[in-house]
Length: 191
Image (cartoon, rainbow, N blue to C red):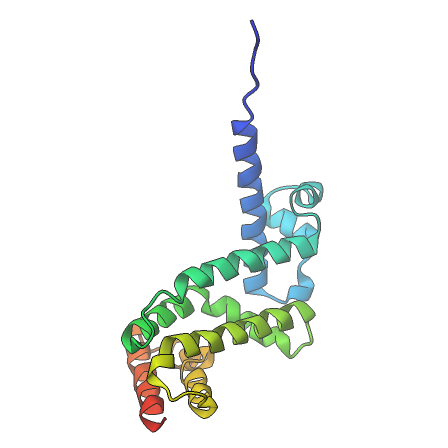
């Protein structure tokens, strides 16, 4: 009798380990300086050894890159599905994104000024994504090539506006969306 070897359990366990490593890395990225993230802190957070982290991700940078891809995919799922020109839907989508990812993004923004290269690159990518989102979301409502209007909309929908309203002033997501909607509509009326 020939016995076949079933790799599905081993594969599932490896996938779970990789997930724990990425989750631990993401927690570290969201909670403190990138420069403080070490293989040991990742391994401790995931409940594995440093060797296991290396076997799954290759390096500390591999862990951070994997988290960057994962967060990028999540953001792409959170934003960009509304019909261009639908202000209400675009802002609802944006507020949901900020509620889910805002603290992580704010942590990265805080590290940009400290000169952390990884945080600086993540922030630059985020700014480019946000500007492209503004162009796609509000483009049908804008005159062609009106960079001042695009700048106004980028500012009106910036994460720091969300931070001011939600975290500093304690406004609800609904109120935050209403304020941002007013800012966006004003910017659109002026264009």
